Image (cartoon, rainbow, N blue to C red; front, side, top):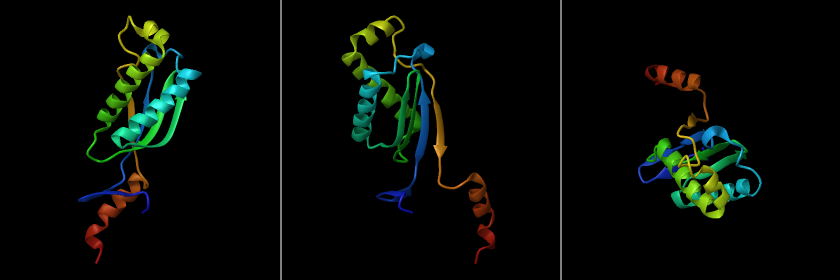
Length: 135
């Protein structure tokens, strides 16, 4: 129960596993860029009140597991992380900006999102099915 968070009229546990890649899946997220990107994600998440549970930056894609308020859509989280991180990386690494300058953006358009919970879907189904039989 400690994982649950609260708002004024809501108790929640909302977690997402997000994955996306740089455009053309080029292996540009390594070395200093990787270190900077992790710091940028930390700053963004602090500002927008997302909690990073786990983060890994691979040379050609990103995995981020985070918790957010239920009032924030996962697509908004991805859009925020992608847009601000691209702007910040381009400021810090002009060569990266020049490399991606012709295609107009650092990140590919797509992304993967999966919701994560503490119980299985079978447990939820069984709980709902048993509601009328409970005293």
